[in-house]
Image (cartoon, rainbow, N blue to C red):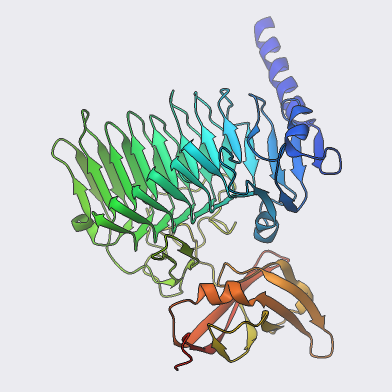
Length: 476
């Protein structure tokens, strides 16, 4: 009985310790992120104000085994996440975070954007190794590069990080895993968008050696490999499970979607309730390897606007949300049970209908708003500063109900400025013209531009307007 009381007291102490963790603010309390980390104890939280952080003390961040959280002010707010940036500036040998001291899942990175990492070896944005198992959630990894794992690398000694709700786009690996590289690890990757990444093998993911990676509820699309496996390259004993995920529009010289290769050890991949372009015809499985196949389909997922990697290996942003008529809505695993507080890539409840949706986006039909975009004709070669947009709300709601920090054009372009027109009862928004034109590159004629966001009660809103695009030569 005495021993039982001792255990209970220890548990109460641990819970109390977690609840009493201090909050340290950057830059208010410490000028750099690493200084703040050094000042923490287990279960403390470092909160980073919106802004761009670069240079010494703000890159190559290391928890040194501490069980702490480093996060933005609002990790669930897309606008805040995209404006809280760790910029490695392309400096050789720089990345966002390194975990190599056996950190557990209580070590967490939440709601930050990492860009410009540049590693000659592993992980341009994040590297987990030596049995480290951090939790990485609601982050954006964009425009990073490394030899292996343009954005994230999971290394030796069976590291098991949890990566959830992250956007991994436009990263490059010199050899393998444009988005994610796994060597002997077993990460759990859920509700993530992995799109527009590039590598010679495994445009999105490279996985090798003994391990059991689990991928669920992800959209793996528009990635490119110059050799094998536009989406995934898996070999030498890595046994991967993929469920409720979309693999679409990936490109490679051979095996556009997946290559399961035999090299010294048998490798297996298990697919269930996935939408895979080309079905089994776009999956190459070597003799001696195994493919599990259950309830998968090959149907156009109907994205709002698909991004892609251009001829210069640059990612042209897309809007990977599902359209209302998508066959991926309510067609996921009927036995799927969402975890506590589990959300999709936008922070929406993971199961919103009868069944979970396939892919990273859980479709929610919100209220419709009236959107008007100017100019009505846009020349992609013009040099103007802004695309102007107005939003008016009907159906019993008001402009005051809109959370302006969540407004995005095509799920990608963040407003440059937002003002309120009291006379017209409208929001007046300016979007960056260059960013919008890059989004529309290669398109012509009538195009529907979609504006999305959330109300203050967390309900989604959406509206669209049609404009006419002219090609760079001025020809309609």
